[in-house]
Length: 255
Image (cartoon, rainbow, N blue to C red; front, side, top):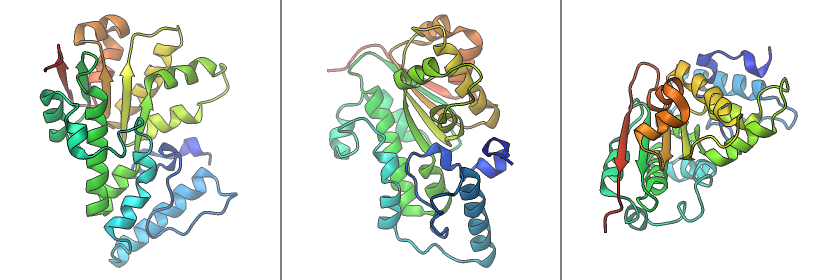
């Protein structure tokens, strides 16, 4: 069995591929250096299932779980990891802030649209920070889901797609985006290269089939998104499986 042979159930809460530096779960011993992704996934799932069957509570406290989520927070743009909540919220248009405060696991896709300076990226960072805080505090499922959040610059994702040779397989960066339990696509712009749209389709099609949510920030409005990416891909941006998701559009920066 290869890493690509895992079912959705295997990957649903244990996709180590969606984290750059995420460590093993609470009850999982460190994997040897030679372990494959498949080894890590199988060992983590066995340990989790055994702990649940035996009724064994988590052994880590909130502070330790917070430290374990640090790699997720370190994906955020410079300054957004360490800013105070008040500082971060001060950068966000109230409509965008309400949208991310109201988002929860199961809400579906969310598209944050607005002019430069309206706080789209800050709003997405605010959401990631809140989910990590909840995961550290509550443990179990919220912690597992938070540990599988991926922040992805759309510009960097496009570059990966352009550099990938045909027939060379799926690059690790793209797989991490496909299997993250929450993906944040930051600063989506019209495709500048013929491969950019194909790369985005590759990611969003996989996520659509699994019903896993994506948060997108963009300076485009809904009509411009459809014009730039076409009807089918636009639906993938707005929809998550059977859920239509939501979008918020800020047309100007409030002073």
